Length: 179
Image (cartoon, rainbow, N blue to C red; front, top):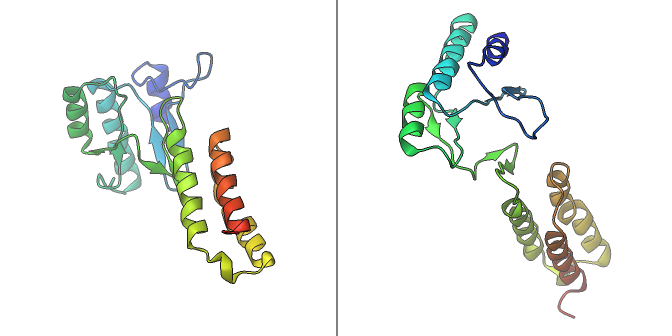
């Protein structure tokens, strides 16, 4: 971590900013995961490769390139991405990857994320046999499952009104059945 911070201070790694006046984010470390942010240049790719090598030497652990991936902005050319991936030895990751069960969203549109939630609720609801359940049984399924699925994603994103209406429609249809 110290090497990453030093490289940011020395302008060897530039990181990202999530807003105009926000601080630079060069890395995020979680329990078993690490995210490193840099410009898509061979120089910064070499710095990250060097930092990972220092980590391997200091910890005695070997970085498993199969478990790691590198993602690029759509503005980066294929030649540049190819050279950086070759230098790091990592595979490319597209924008529809998941992290902590959520798709990684780049840009302002979050329709893909909410589409996933609506589909998950629909899969659950359509599998239930409403004719064989009491009102109490239906209520438990709705509260414990159908309403719990969007709760996790709503802790990260503000869910769209149209997605809420779709989920609400599915729950209403399940509650009242075909009558």
